[in-house]
Amino acid sequence: MRNKLFIIFILALSSCSSPWEKGESFDFSTLEKIPVENISLERTVVAYGSIEPLVQVEVKSEASGLVSEVLVEKGDNVTKGQELIKLDQKLLNSRLNQALATKTSSEASLESSKLELESARRNLSRTEELVDKGFGTEEELLQAEERFKRAGLSLKIQEANLQEVLERVNEAQEELNNATIYAPVDGTVLNLLIEEGSAVSSATGGMGGGTSLLVIGNMKTMKFLGLVDETEVSSVKEDMKCSIQVQSQSDSTFDGFLYRIYPMGVQSGGIINYEIEVRIDNSEKKLLPKMTGEARFVVSSVEAIGLPDTALIFEGSKTFVWKYNEEGIVERKSVTVGKIGDENVEILSGLEIGDEVVNRPPADLEMKMIGSGSKRRGR
Image (cartoon, rainbow, N blue to C red; front, side):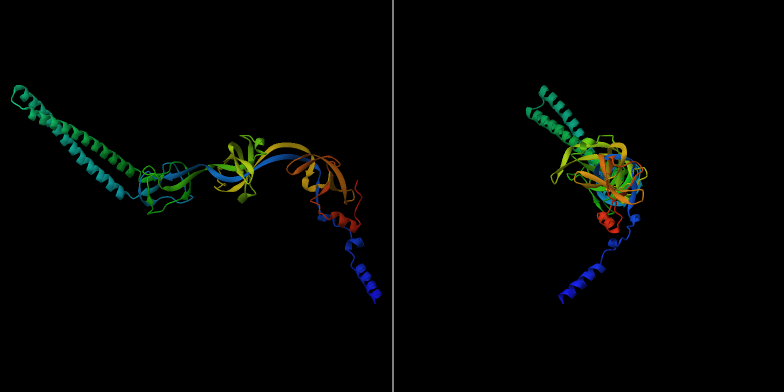
């Protein structure tokens, strides 16, 4: 019984043999073929970061009050001097009228104090003459002098009061003038922070710095703020050109130049990076604030005979490729490599321009070729 089972097992194995073992030819058309040619060996430094407007202004009000009109919307383009927001002027007019009424009263009090001082001065002069002629007493002279001093002090107080009132009038008038908020620069409304009915505090009237109304950014020139590793920051220099690519527009690149390398390193997770600022022309306004992406700097570039590094197979200290022979079948070929770029590698020996090799060869390529009987001995 055991002998019968063993014979059946052997027959089953023979019937389940691999198609490669039957000599089925390997389909080389499934492989990606690339030529050996003159290529550019580039070494690049990449910074990762985000896009911001070069000029961005947070607009605040110099007056306090309630918002009566909002004349723009988020995304609107505005010009310098354009009306943006209006505050309710009823309260501001009331403040100004009250200040003007107080001013009128203070001016009247000041005029009265001036008249009293002049009257006290004449009375003192007359009393002094009478005392000198023996027709007045020392007590009358003391009273006249006291009246003159009080009148002088009263005048100074009224002058100070009027000055304070005039300042309040000027402030009320200025607040009324500031009840309309204008665009300080040309640009685009990036964010609108208030609505009709919102209470607004003056940027100059308190400790809080005032209410932020909206944010305007000039989108014609943008800046890319990114981080470069400390091991690579010495390879980039100010004014160096670079290409910008953002995630939302992966099929487009934008030209820029390195404007500044900030000297203070930023540590995160034990790694030191340095912040850089790249300036970008955005006349077509394709770039928007907060877009994330990368700035790529080419720090060296040479021409050489070579291949993409994806075509190479590294085994210890040796390097191989799968090279097509004259029959269109691939064979392992030992090569010597030279300079290495970000994506390409220089070939010093083993291949010539015009030779063709497999790019991204599958890991089991050799086993498949052995099974198909297509394998050729490598040199």
